[in-house]
Length: 490
Image (cartoon, rainbow, N blue to C red):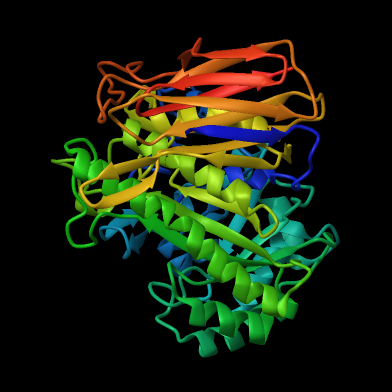
């Protein structure tokens, strides 16, 4: 039997809006052509930043944006990206294809983007190839209001008032591309760097330590033991991948690969539980946030594209996976304070794909838009009994669900049917209240690999959903196969 109970007057904590964060790296066409086209471009822009992209991301209520990487961050020197653009140095992007980085998109351009988006900047500083003084000076340049040489240099470059920076990453993947460090070594490096990442005019700098990937629980243990007192957040990276050596096509796959990828995505839950348990030993008050600042699907690049640019299409499979993963983050809202899907535009599990002046929204984008009502809402206790979706000898729950209540008392229920073959009938009980109004939307498609293209940009988009009936506190839903549904009750 498929059934659920929602305690509509309950309080399981706030779903931090920053769980719906994004990530833009100097990788492929994420920044250049995706976000930045330059002021002389024929593509409509505001100070070089694409207007269509800004409008689309604002529609998601995008809470934060992580930049400049990723691996690129630990080879990025902030001074390269300030001052007159035609005088900025041209560097080799050694991580992503040895292409030339002209640094036309730097600190001022990124902060302009965040202001246009009305989102919080999340800046990742260089530990791998940088220095303590370099990262400390960047903070002063950006955030100090007084009469210092660095603050005056910022003014000379066009910004009178300091920027308000809260989220500050100290290195990226320092176990790998950020320096191939041992946990014990990075813990000492972090302590030193964090000491000099000062609160110049912002008393609330949120320092994020470079954390583990996947199931590297040793890294979490060492960082929490040695450095928890000097951090506000610890990052975690986990990608849903079929096989590292053979990731498979984003669009050409059978049910076996559908099942396996979703199964890999659900592993996020036990991974978060174990890392959280380690953090709890050193931080029982849950002061330090777990920051999942890279997550999403990773497929083979699209045929004919640069393999170093990580450009992949985005299908209904990616959308269902995104919905189920966001539900997992909701369930860990006591410890998960932020998450950043990788990446925003033209890279990995992107929100947006661009081709010259054209822009399309991906199925994953639509999930973020359908779920945006969860941002900063109160998570409601939800008990779900779901049948299994089985394939061969393997099984996983067919249904993923979450519910929240906003300040106006409206209830948002989101559900994903992971089974690509069969609809599921659900009976729900809304304890603690009766509701008289309900609206619904659904995201689905004719095929598992349904997607939007530049020739057919609206193949997969939300539609009105009439498969739910409400009678007082009782809710019945027929959830179509391979679908994401959002219901709003008032």
